[in-house]
Image (cartoon, rainbow, N blue to C red):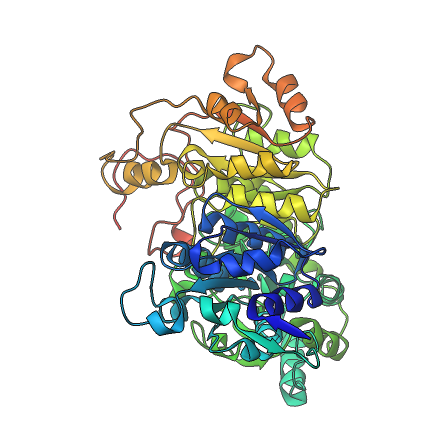
Length: 562
């Protein structure tokens, strides 16, 4: 049959199983939208900003583990996607951004809304394509899904000129949908060497990263950890890959970890890094990270092996497949003395959460929200103090329940990601913890949430400040508070109602606990304003550039040298 390039695109996306596409139409992608309007299988989510569309797609992908798609037009539409793509690349999230472009005959003429989208996207994507013809789309679209999902997942961009979208060709045979490629065989010698090191270790620790979630390795990780009887610490991106309530769990490591976690890492004699990349927020000063430990490092991306810390054994492999071979090669044993030492560290250096019972305290709002919500609640966050407190205080038992911007640390991530998650998982509670600074970055997506009828709750930790900037200025810049306090006090509840969503203000009730329960159990999109004291800091905190052992544990009066 005879199809336009735009019709081929939509048909191929249908064949990939895509059911929702977030985006915004414009002149250069209108043929795509015209074809999409006739699809009986794909719903469109009209975002209010292309960055928001990208984060909606991320919310979908992070919840399902499958590649999600978003659309944007040329020029400013395309440039607005760059932050969402960079965020996805650093966190290894499979999203596919499809942009319209000016006709090929106008490229290079500085035409209206012309920009080199392909060139701009190269540093922030896993791969980028520029479609030269409608026929090329038959190859590009399936390949884009294969690339996004295979190996270390990541974002892909496809730029399609308007004349390519309108070009008509005959399609005799549709290509097979793009699928994730299987990884190559794992080197048996490396598995034997790693197993021998694990068997010899007396004080091993498993260091679990986001790769454990991407590979779906949570069951094998649990089995492996119990077999070798080692404590397990997770990165920010690895939360949920190992049950927080498990007796071998020692929580998140790094910049805002509990003191006992970082102290345990100082004492370990073997670090088993699984799907983790030794990020600076996890390791602190690298030379002083796990100073007495040998290292076994397993990661699907060969570029991560030996990049930050030289591993004694480095294995490039899908983590799920690697553990299937590694676990039975190790000796099942109990390490009672080491676990007793871990218990002692937990008793002596516990995680402090002041006023955890109060729903209007910095930690209390996190703890009380979890108490009220079901166990399988999906949590998204923006970036700042509320993000770190949520990571510290919200206990995750399962993977893909914690969606946060880790590598890029993007304010404005939380709300649109929550929309994507809520639309993909309508039977689960979705809660977005945000700050007043972060929420203002993409607050316009409240309109999208209301229009879509998304069932999500935005818990706004409102200290009328850029809280983490304020904290660092207090601790490290002689209390020179500059450009981090807001002079205006916004009525976020009024703003939320203006967007058509419900709003509750814990500052205006005599019973904030009851109001919080009512708000969290309400239907649809709801904003909950929670007043937070700006002087409340996130502790522990490792000073920028410092070692994890140098973490600050309480408010200090003097400026801390950096």
